[in-house]
Figure 1 (cartoon, helix red, strand yellow):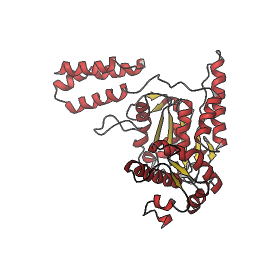
Figure 2 (cartoon, one colour):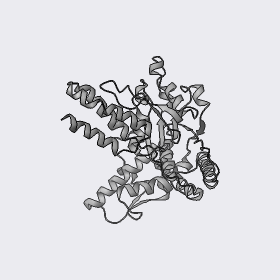
Figure 3 (spheres, helix red, strand yellow):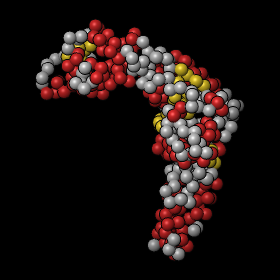
Figure 4 (cartoon, one colour):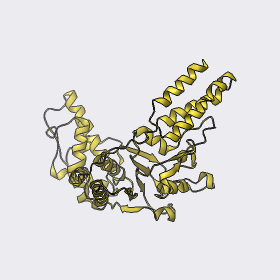
Length: 354
């Protein structure tokens, strides 16, 4: 049995792409397995097995190849997002630098990835823009909710000597994407807890993670060895900067997402949200038509909501009801929404229209 267990762990190590120092560390652990099992110390054996399994899942050296075609990236962002020219410009500037360095065979210096803070109210499109940036670049995307985190273990991991130990969210994101350069969205930064002392100070941990002078050798407490996370693109979101440390603000570029007026909302609804919702629900343009004069009566009751989340939810509710009517045969041909009939496609408990 002991030989079988040791061979299992060795097989995991042998099949993994590991830096020499990490492989050496795991082989040292492997040398203890037989003695642990012979001595009946199965709990420590399990700790080693879990550590090996987590560590060998890290995609060392695996990078997504960035799409460096500025025209394609701009077209991709424009097709999914109305306005927001500042953030689009910053991404294109970053890609331009990458492109120049790729063409310069003598340039060995790394490109510092910008750390962007998307600042604006809820529902304004911060998360969807971050996803679109990842798609346009050809990178993987992970959203990590840091709002409400009260314990630094969640972001930095917990010592592998503890029974309930595991890596932190950053390492888990690398593992889940299979690359070392994903776009990582750290959501709701302004809601991070800063109380509870140094051991629970998530903001301080984020400061280290986002510091380009330190994140080339980030140490997750579970792994306990330096890990280069400098190639990740970090995008942060917040509703305001009130709860964010000055030291962290000094390291990031703030991109303000301004509130949408009714004209903006109609443009977004017509050209971005409605095509998206039609696709999600399997409806064609001919099956669900919005008459020009219906937009104002849909958007106006949502005027207090400067974002677009509620508007998208409304369109999705309408599309689902239309899809059901088409499938059950209660309507034939196109459904044309007008100021006179649109309320029948709004849920009864939708308070705005009560």
